[in-house]
Image 1 (cartoon, helix red, strand yellow):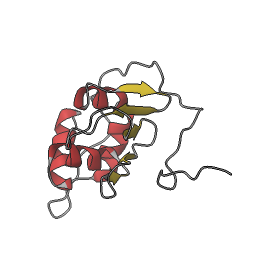
Image 2 (spheres, rainbow, N blue to C red; image 1 turned 90 degrees about the vertical axis):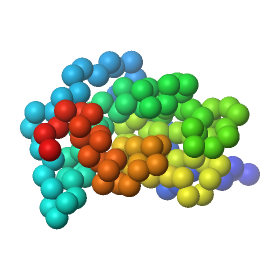
Image 3 (cartoon, one colour; image 1 turned 90 degrees about the horizontal axis):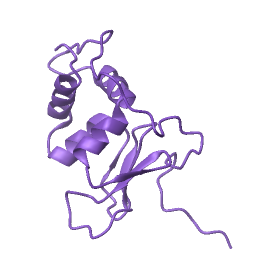
Image 4 (cartoon, rainbow, N blue to C red; image 1 turned 135 degrees about the horizontal axis):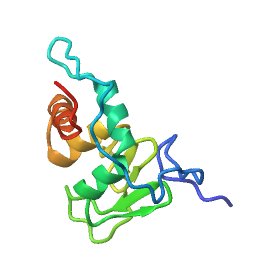
Length: 136
């Protein structure tokens, strides 16, 4: 009998991962700007820029983790987690989840930053844009 996966739909290991071993270069993004409409940052541009350097970002934000295929596997810093494995970030797509909690999951780097640092999505997007050197 096949074992049923507990991972959310669309979240899986992709053996064709192209981020393994690459060291990201300069995190500055020249072509994108953080355009604000009625006080909201350009989430799409920020997420796109963050995906380019996501391995470096998660290594900085979650230093006790390790890369396993296309995923960053670590402990969840927001709860008592004894060993790595239930908290994973897909380094190619930006999807992340804590498989021990039903409400701890998201689909992009901005939502990951918001979750990890206890911020709103807008505040996390602005902080991430500043971190990436995107003009605001």
